[in-house]
Image 1 (cartoon, rainbow over the protein chains, first blue to last red):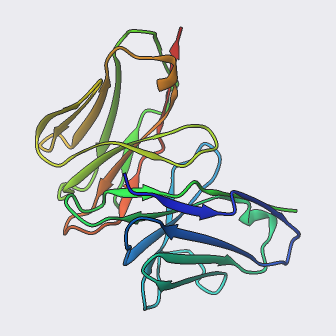
Image 2: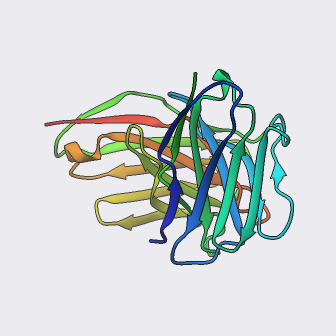
Length: 117
Length: 112
């Protein structure tokens, strides 16, 4: 299957700082990437859709000024959690699609465990 | 509101048995259906996908789809302890969007 690389795997930061997470498609070009958040024992919740060369589309309830997404190339999308607070502590996962069919066949990065102190 | 429901489990089966995981979805127009396996602390891994009614087999895994009943299942034959994980059901929206809605997952434990 396709390979999606995500870094860092885990990060611990102080409240109020910003954290950047990178997501790269290693062996394919991804015009669209997705960012998910997962709290313990909960399902993946889609935060935003990252489109290469255009603004990200955020899901309802997700603050676009807090979760900055940049998709500058066909292989790289970044998520920056700005002014992180303890309630932002979660497992963040990116994913990308190699294209259909079937549409929606996603490959996930390894995830980033964020802990905000 | 598009919803995907799964029994959270845990589901325990003995080694060598068949594990049956079930999922229902609310959007009748959904077109694509996926099963992901997620080990604790890891990201999901695609196991199976199906988009036509009926069964689809891949090795020890069989996905079953019944669009009339809005039901999709995953059967794991000859279950192994290494199959112990949380299995996530995901459903694609009508219209071919790549956005997926995930269920909360079913935790499976295969006992040696």
